[in-house]
Structures are given as structure tokens and as C-alpha cells.
Image (cartoon, rainbow, N blue to C red; front, side, top):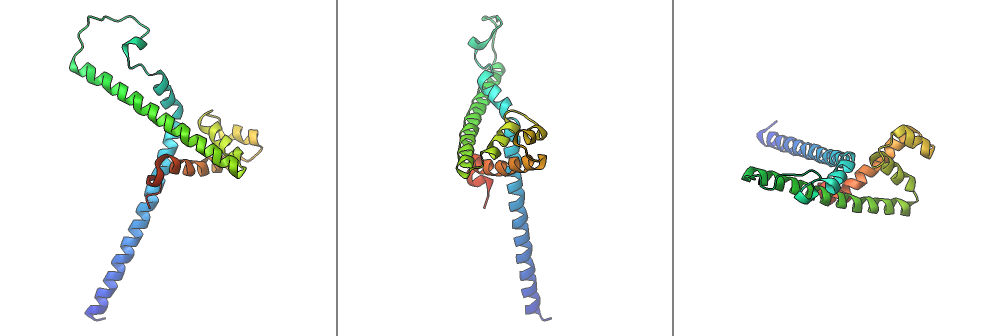
Amino acid sequence: MNQEERNEFVKKAIKEAIKERDEQLLKEKKKKAFQNTRLLMKNYNAFKFCALNGVSEVDQLEKSYDENEDVDDRDILYIDSIRRSKMKSLIMVCHIEKCLNRLEEYERQKGTIEKYLTFRYYFIDEMSYESIAEVHGTATITARRWVNELLNLLGVYLFGVDALKI
């Protein structure tokens, strides 16, 4: 094998390695979007509670407090942090609800509303796969498959092109 053939071989090997690495990175990004969507939905009820019930203003307090108590800069930063967190939760809840409405509409159009209901029962109503399977008269594995299928679709609705990272 002469020098030119070796150089060509090395170039091909490098191109193949880069292609393989890019494919692996794409798989990892898609998996992360799926995991993030699952995490958001697993915590959806907690986000909603925080957004709707979180105390971030004095007039929301049920207990009496001392109005003359000194408030230092750290307290103000902490309270501002709570307000920002509550606002972020509210924005995320509203975004999730819009996406859930679109997901429901999409499944209705396809004639597969039971998939959406399964998704909703699992994440919003916190039913087990076994209970959902009983409701729909399907196997537990079918309920799991439907939830995972809709998680992928919801990920695209929630994160747009970032869910795909193509």
C-alpha cells in the first residue's frame, strides 16, 4: 500500500467515524428530548399546583406577620426567586396545556382518541397502566406503547425543532 492509498484509507476511516459520532449524538439528543418531555409530564400536576397556589405576595399569606420586621437584600432576592419560579411554572403549564389540546385534536382527527385518553389518564389522572388497560380493554403493554408514542409527539409540540435536533 503506497502513501496515497494510506491517506485515502485514513480519510475514509475519519469520515466514517465522524458520521458514526454524529448519528450517536443525534440519538442521544432525541433520547434527551423524550426524557425531558416525560419529566415535564411526570411533574405537570406539581407545576400546576405551584403556578396556581404558590405564595409569592404578602396578601396571599394566611398567617399574621410583623410588618415592621426588617427585610434585607437576601430576603428580597429569595422572594424574587420564588416569583420567577412561579411565573416560569405558570408559563410552562400554559404551554403544556396548549400542546395537550393540540395532541388531543390530532388524535381525534386520526380517530384514535383512546391513545390521548390513555396519555391523559397516565400523566394527569395518575392512573396505573393496569387500570388504563382495563378501562380501554387493552393489554398493559399497549397502554405503555401509546403513552410513549404520544410522548414523542408531545416533545415536538413542546420543544419544536429542538426536540428533533436535525
